[in-house]
Length: 327
Image (cartoon, rainbow, N blue to C red; front, side, top):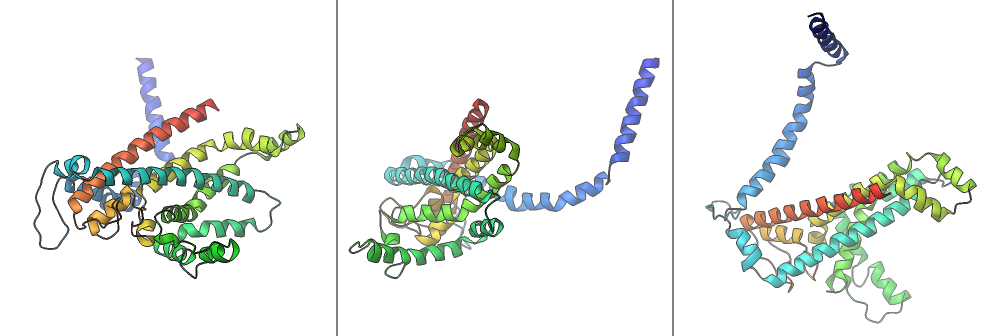
C-alpha cells in the first residue's frame, strides 16, 4: 500500500512538473500549427488524393465536358495499349536524366563546397551567394538564359564553336537530336547545384578543424584527408543530396518544357505527364506532339511516376544507408 501510494504521488509530481515546464498551453501550440497543417492538407494532400481518384476517370479538364469513372482503362492503356517504343524511350531518357543529374550535380556541389569552405579564400560569402543564386530563379528565367546561351547564330556557345574551335557549320544545339538533351541536363544541374552545395557546406562546417590539423601533422596528403576524413563525415549530407537530386530529376519537367517543349528527344516521363494533361510538346519518341487535355490519363501517368519515384527512393536510401554503415 505504501509503495502504491508513493508511486501515485510520483506520477502526480511528474505531471505537475511537466505542466510547469510548458512555455505555452496545448491549445496555443495547436493554433500555431494550424496554418501549416491547413496549407499541407489543401495544397498537398488533397490534390494528391484527387490525382489518384482522377486517374480512374476520363476527365479532360475542358469546361462543360462530362466525365465518368472508367476503372483501370488508363493504366491498361499506359502499360499495354500505347506505343511501346515511346514509353521505353521516355523511361530511358528519364533514367539517364536522373543518373547524370544526380552524379554530376552532387560531385560539382561537393567540390565547390570544399573550396568555398576554405578559410583562406577571400570573398567566399559573396561567392556562395553567387553560386546559390540560380536556385532562387524561376524555371522561366533559367530557361531564357540558357536559350540565349545556346541560341544560333549569336549565342556564346555557337560563337565559341565557330570562332575559337573553328568548327564549320556548328549545330543549332537546342534544335539538335544529339545535343538538346545534354543542354537541358546542363541547365538542370546549373539551377540546382547551389542547393546541394549549401547542404554540403553546412555538413563541412560541423567537422572539427583539429582533425584536419592532426592529419596534416601525420603527413596525410590533401586527397587522403578528403577521402578518409571529409567523405565519411559528410556522408549523411551525401545521402540527403542524392535522394533530393533523384526525386527532383525524376519529377522535373519545367526546364524541359520551357527550353525545348519536349522535342528533339528531350521528353522525360514528367514531361509526358504535363504534355498529356495540358497539350504541347514533342513528347513522343518520334518527336511528335502528344494529344493534350487528357487529364485523367495524365493523372494515371503521374501515379505511375509517383510509384516509380517512391521505389527508386527507397532502394537508393537503402543502398546509401548500407554504404554509410560500412564506413
